[in-house]
Image (tube, rainbow, N blue to C red; front, top):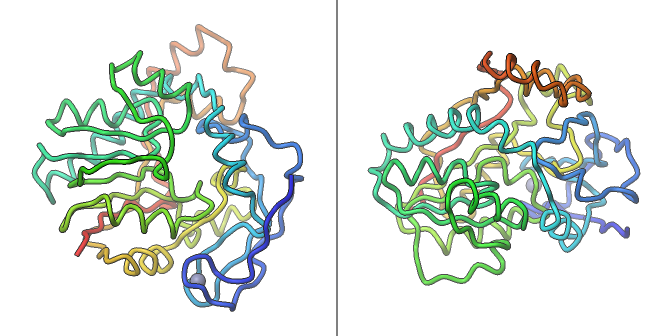
Length: 295
Ligand SMILES: [Zn+2]
């Protein structure tokens, strides 16, 4: 696979870029399995650069967008929905905070909707829902599990005359080759005063710093990283103002956590039943949950 080089920061266009961390795998034999949401092979790093101006961290050289899209469209992530309870808990908290900013009953668009867990809850809470998801498998899962029809593809193919009051990007930005182009498209899909909700890892977090290369967000699917400064730079560029931010906490069953560390235990059915009953709230202070308003 031929990778592309960058000579400028893809967010602020500055030439002042330098090596951040050296990569530690050969991109030649990666496949769609490496892009699973539930991938537990942490510690895989692209060769990362950072921008001295806006502090955005990005893979350089980087994998061309058409390869990434192919991987996501072929993605088959059977484990994702197994952890629907924990994920629902995360998503309910987001909707609760959103309600304080904006009344439900509006149109919400979830991009990278996976199997529709978030949209299913949003629908129950009175939102008019739409979702975009590139994986054929996950689009079928959403239909099968919740009766939700997602648009199969990406924001590039999504044609609509609608405007949305809320757009959610839950763990999406770190997967994109070109987050700048992506946010410029979001700007056209969202209403004036609409709310953009972003959850993304924070490369500047204390957790990221102490774990170094072993930080659990270093995995093949994560091709770039933000901190508060770089995300604010990107959002401001397209007329968004951050109105609320907080540290995102993850809710997991102990089954999910333990099989991250010991993948071979995944097939132990009895153990699965017991461990799924034990729930965890994991607050590592290493992701941002951001609410931004379009001005
Ligand atoms: Zn920059």
